[in-house]
Amino acid sequence: MIFLRQNTATRVTVGPFFDKTDGITPEVALTATNEKLTFIVDDGGVPTLVIDTTATASGGDNDFIHITNDDAGYYDLELTAAQTNYVGRAKLAITYATDHCPVFHEFSILPVNVYDSMFGMDNLQVDVTQLLGTAWLTPGTAGTPDVNLKLLSGDATAADNAESFFDGTGYAGTNNVIPIVTTAGLADDAITSAKFDEVTAFPLKLSDVGSTQIARTGNDSDTLETLSDQIDTVCVFDASIDSVVLAAVQSLYAPAKVDDIPSSDITAIKAVTDDMSEMLEDDGGVKRFTANALELIDLSSVTFSMSGMGSIACTYSLTKSENGLPISNVVISVTTDSTGQNVVASGVTDQNGNITLYLDAGTVYIWRYKSGINFTNPVSVTYSLSSMSASGTGTTATQQSNSRSRVTYAGSS
Image (tube, rainbow, N blue to C red; front, side, top):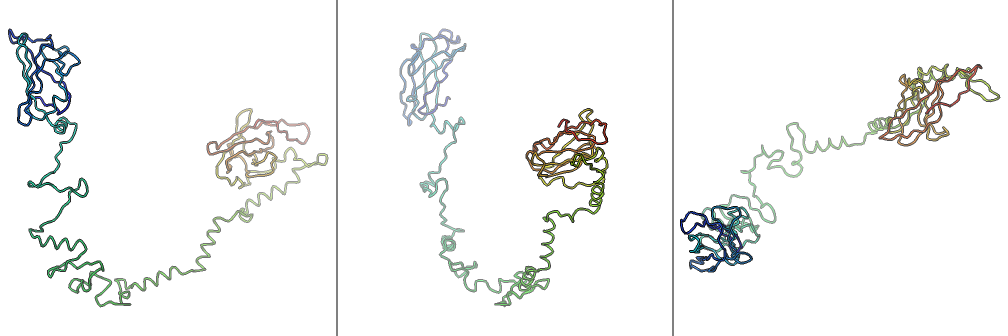
């Protein structure tokens, strides 16, 4: 049995065709126009002759072509959509007495949905159209059946009462045990003492009315009224408590003052300034540092706390240009201008020649000072979140023959 799709042009395999003389030798070179086709369909239970003609070789309704590379006597036969536009059983006979034995095939032409569901192209349509021989009602919402309850436990009256109860019209039957609900709310006396347990219904009793409803006490002797009073007490403004909170907040955000500098730092700074007269000399009316001025300052005893107020922790490193060794105890001053007026950070490099400066993103000017080291001041450095480190070099100064030294800025950056 070969299945065909209704009203669909198709090509079917027919055969095998055997030689009429011995009945076993496959015929693989038949002439299409010699082949007589007879196709009969049981249309509505009535056999109907649909095809009664010879096959065509090419471009016709019923092209008959040998299947390429076949050696068993099979052929490709074309059927038109009109020739398959039936539903039911069908038979096909292909004859030509001169060349081969007759060939017969049986078909079953199926509705499109049935055929497609069988071969995975669609779902079999099983719509409900009748129930016990009665047409199914069209639902109000497509895909959702309307359900009308006719009986409840075999009782039509019970079904009607259920409808009245749930549709809002209400049902006040004498045997009704469900509280009556109306649009006005809960009916008077719907909850009786028999249905109310004081133990589980805490904190109210049946006798509680008016003020007694909030005077009922719990296990910890608190009433709703006393709890409310306690909440009010907590929320009352307390000047003494608020002043403590305010002072704490102010201490977090108050700006730094001289009083905040540790006394040990002040003592160290004073020791340096006391020796200032020994660090200066007169050079034609101009005060200059002596050659050993910076050597008199013990920078290790001074804590510099002006490393900046910016949002980025930037590092700056110094090494000697001649040997790459780190330069420690270099006084660093950072300004936002090339003239050195607006100082935003300062400090001293550590033993590794490094210093951490807290700066905002942008370009700054760095000034470097140390006795015996020559620097070119200032150098401009641009810091950002993606570039938070920079470095520079200094050159060891050569001794001059006189007792004092002029600082010359002739080093690399």
